[in-house]
Length: 88
Image (cartoon, rainbow, N blue to C red; front, side, top):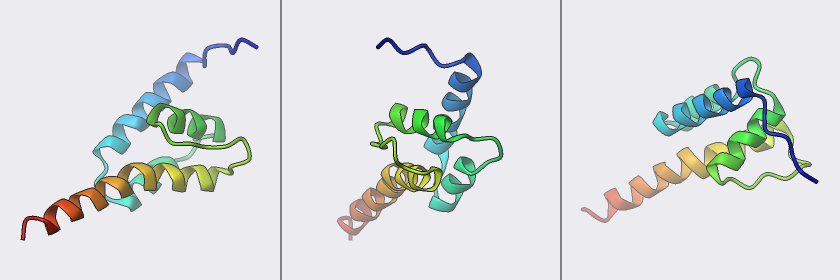
């Protein structure tokens, strides 16, 4: 089946969220971005897809949110900690 392109407002919203997550330096900031009013499960799934985060059709909004934060900001923080530990 051919999927229709997402509505332009979802596209713009997804792009904005991905950009904001890319600048977030703490998990709490990422959670706040993803839990903003009006972000639907479909938008979260689109954000996950754009960011390469696996999300299943059964995942709830909370699960998708956690997966996105841990796969992006959490990964970045762990990587920075490891690199910093190697410099001592």
